[in-house]
Image 1 (tube, protein in one colour):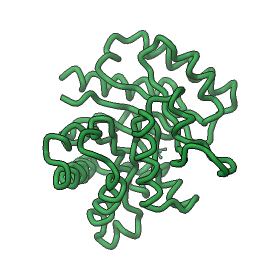
Image 2 (cartoon, rainbow, N blue to C red):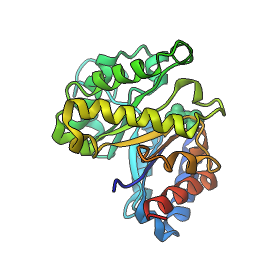
Image 3 (spheres, protein in one colour):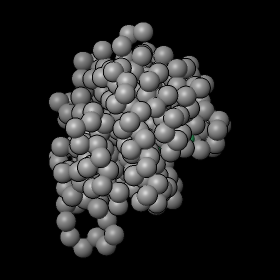
Image 4 (cartoon, protein in one colour):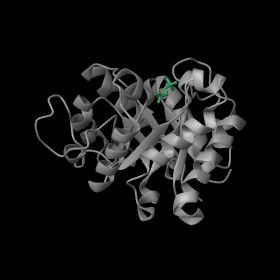
Length: 259
Ligand code: PGA
């Protein structure tokens, strides 16, 4: 069975003090639960807080992720942070989040390069895919998701799939309070796995963990984690609230324990 994975995407939120308070609360709350063995928990704070967060997380089971990376290792790329630079601090990195695609103009090709750079440096990419409202209304959800998955995994090899996570995040569900229907998310999760299986074979594709993302809360996580092809969640807003995030992790852990 695939271990459930809950990742908190803090986006561009928190002051330094708020971030450290949140990390501390999460460490206390999550470490107090033995069931946290049955779920992988990843915190993705802003870049600037990674070093300090890493100190708090040392000797805890909680892992650290970055929200983005640049695919070239070093050079004249003002303001960018490479996967190579992140490799010592993080275990995971989010690539291709819809906010990066929409607000920063990231293409499928750039997302693929980021995923490849992450893997090259031993980071596990959390590859985000998902249709916008226009595509959904036009009945293009499946074609959009399939295209994004095929493109992002173009430079990936089958042997690397166990290190990869795909987050299915319908853009209209992000930050809207309007989560997707569990069964629909499960259906698209299956489509993602089929798309990977067509290229890499079912065994390799079966190792990828697939998350749902978009207005996940403690009240609806069970609906998603209960889907056979969904292995966890990428959580935005609710990851900034320690009690809520701990609740989400606890429900995923119980699922991971086979309850
Ligand atoms: P949300 O964000 O949980 O606030 O909808 C999810 C995401 O963007 O990863």
